[in-house]
Length: 468
Image (cartoon, helix red, strand yellow):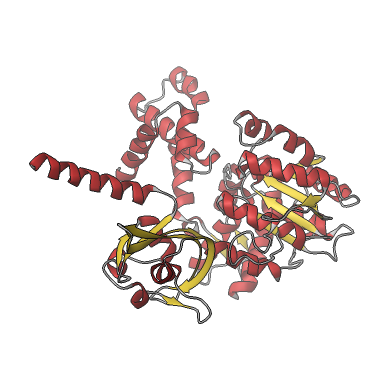
């Protein structure tokens, strides 16, 4: 008997663990409507804690629109199974939730004992659909807004200006913070599609099932409660669609996107017919496409289709002669916003800016200027103490590092300056790992793989440095 109880205990724990790991919401009620199962995903979807729902009557916790009833309660009353029913309701804080539900009544010996609902969250998709329906041509930038006189940036600007003459697809490649969207908007505003819509979507911001509906739209009847909703391609018809971080789409979605680009037609989810679209697609990515293809993050044929015009936006470290112009622009911008009268940088700050590698590029430079001006009082120049701690710590670490090229000079000159090898190696290790982390946008898994370390080993080193 004891063994049987243990088996039941472990089986129950296993079922609970499985329910909490699945990527759908599971909500079950008994024959009175009281909640008996409520998994972790359902809690996340409905922004509810377990104690707010478990052992409570469903209708005491959630509110439903006048024209809708709970699909779970309906299953209890009618004893019928329903599939793909869209339901909009409110939690106990008044937050709106939209789900697609499969609801199943539970019978034991032909007696109705309760009901279980398996739900997929489409709340974010509903909001995006509604917001994008009213989003038209909200571009602010033209080529005049791209600051820089260096040959590196001027070459890209000239190539982008030539691309305004046609409707060919454009692929813009550049590190995070280099200003890829400025180029995309400038191309749109300089082209014959200026009067058409400009719609931008970050492909990494949504899961695959939502991004597909968002791009291609839905057809009435695709699931119960679904309405005819145009996707971004239809909304951008006659204009430009910017797909940011295109390499974050899974390969199946990339294949569907390739079909749209080649045939210039889309098919809404649940529809049986194609709809012609006239859209210029501009795609952005922050990694080398050759690396993305080699690591199966991008289809080769999609790259060739998108890259009819390919622009490589240089990182700030490759056009440091533009830093004074950019600094002047950002100081002017925040002088106006903060009602200040800052005139420029101190000599020390100017020198450090020109020596720094700017892994965050122009965006990082702007953030540092804004942060410095937030703590200034009546000073006219940005001084070293005004700079954010994160920036100053990186500069100080760099100054503490002995350049390897000077080691031989120190030895030959019989210098009294000696840095213990252990300290020098630790400084080099920390600096190099910070460099690799920045290169991989602080993604620990990718940085660890690049360094030939385990994720746990890299995390250990990072934690150790924070404690020092």
